[in-house]
Length: 105
Image 1 (cartoon, helix red, strand yellow):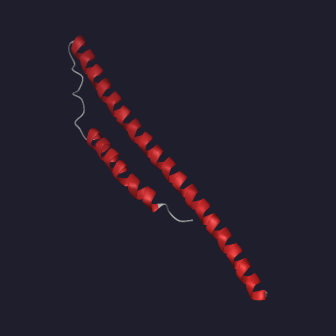
Image 2 (image 1 turned 90 degrees about the vertical axis):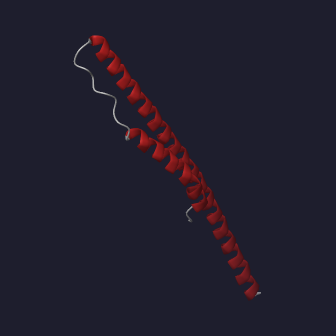
Image 3 (image 1 turned 30 degrees about the vertical axis):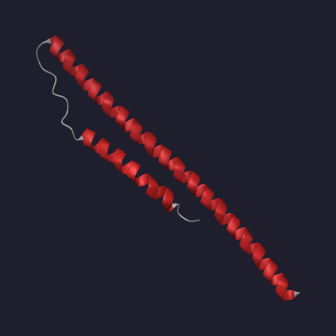
């Protein structure tokens, strides 16, 4: 069974782009620390931090979705390559039988 290189190579730019975006997002400085005084300031800081982490989680989910789609495409390409290999093997067996029969006749 051959490796579906065209499917792998076509998927690489998408995967690299998604991984780069995710890496850049996680390398940003964290949301400022929660202040010690003022309950409204603390609440706002907690809400800001929560929104930041929710945004990161959404982006990570998108990357995982893209990876799953790419794996699904690669699986489909591998299955198609396997079917073609089986068809080629069957054709080779039939051709060998026909060639052997023609030598015996």
